[in-house]
Length: 95
Image (tube, rainbow, N blue to C red):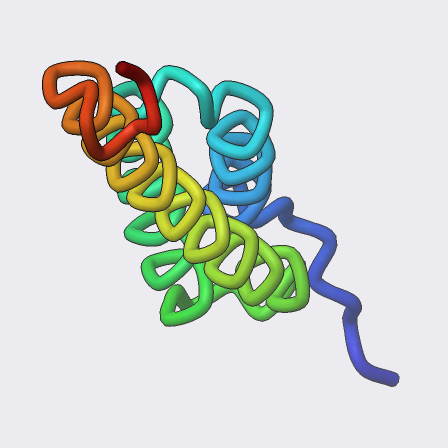
């Protein structure tokens, strides 16, 4: 009879937690980007660890962290466009 490994893969769990946190705080782009990168790194480490438990949480952490990083970059791009239009009122349609 095989023994079941019941150890928790904490890297995978923390990856998922940090990745979800990056989605929650995506309006603060610099914080969201740092937390998303940390979530992606922990997800990769959790997936490659010797403990096979919670591999699905590690994969979810990588995917959600990538989405959080993309959203943070999108917020930066939107802020650049907004500030560029405010500084040049002729392109914003203001007279």
